Length: 584
Image (tube, rainbow, N blue to C red; front, top):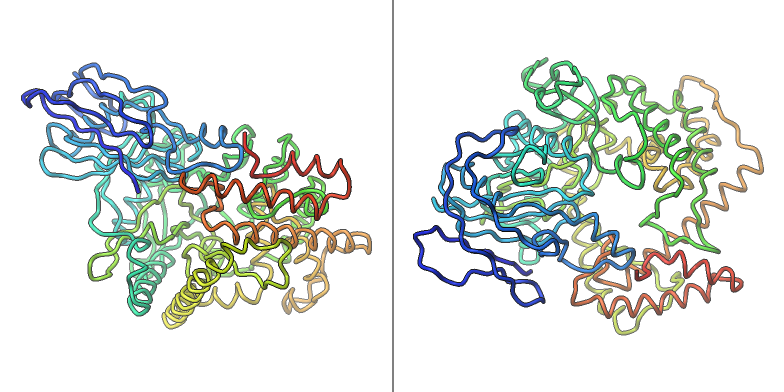
């Protein structure tokens, strides 16, 4: 982990050299320190007054760039959509005023996330705060930030979940002198579970899992009346939305006019060209509206966006899976034809619930006694059916899959494979233990989440309902094969005697079987690549220190893939052009 620190002192401080330490690039000098300024008022929509002119930092300063590592494919584009310029000095002023202080004494960049710039600020009154600046790829600017702040307040006040207190924020960059949306929030005490995990006993980790399961039980106990994202009513007043209504186990029906449920701001609805298309993003008042909108949205994208997005889950090219627009459209048409038959009629699983959808160990803060001190990163949280936002297994990051050496399509790197095998086996063993503890605790609590565990494991309808909203990206072959399987299994339609509404001809069955087979092989290929490269994330980036060795190995793998799957020079050329880890 590295940090870059800018130290600013008030005008009474003696003159000293002030600088920002740059990662792997020498030093850049900052202008003189900024004196405390008088600010009349600050709110989510007001601007700062009487601010002195701020010196500017260069566009390529590391405060504005993704510097955590290197991307292995389309790097220029990936860096561009994570570049965010803002006024660092104005941010420091706003942070100080937000906690009733005079000035900020130190600002430090934290390791980059995929969607936000996170900064740690020290204030002259001893306060420590966190500033969050969303990147261009984080979602629709106003809705993303406004929803995150509203969600945090609701989760904090109603669901009694420890989340950072928000001191100041703005969801409209043009209304601030900072020049970007931002959230200034409490720096919660604690250390991330990810940092502590290697030194924790299994018993302590299981205790944490049970605590997180309890929070999920609390989240699932609140049932809303609509699907979408949560906002303060004043931030989306132009949409003329009704006041928030929800039901709790303890209080019964509740009306809270401070909040509303508005358009879904999950970032996947605004990527890969989707942001340019007019889509139904909610809110929705019934499960039928929600499910229909999912399919119609994917069809709209497939008919209007010229290029299909690249999947991160499968290696695509000649001889393997190649995404086909017609198959994606066909599976959506089948879905619309069977929707009435596969919907979970009058099921508690349909109820709109809120849940954190990124419960990785780095978003969970622990106290020295391994109690949960905070749950971080509520960006893009949505209110969706219970089956859509709750995993039946412990929602921790999955360790890389271990493949049977006899089934490998690629020859493992002998210098790395043996070292990774033991490490990943330990990781998989730990996750299995945590999964078991998570499931056992939810079953013991006898909540809707407990019922969902059995339903998800045994009812393929759930899988189809969850895959369809992402068919534009991936999953069409898997969804098609499940639909065909359900057509062959009359009992899966329940006891109502409803006839299966879609027939699959022999030609369709062969096409689906072939597509499913190729997708499985493509998925295995990508898994093998990740298995051999210990530092390659699903998002396609690696630490700087491993970039050269990883790209060298990827070049060798590319040659092996071409040799194995290319039948001629045309296939070889296509593989080179479609290789996902190609340097710019």
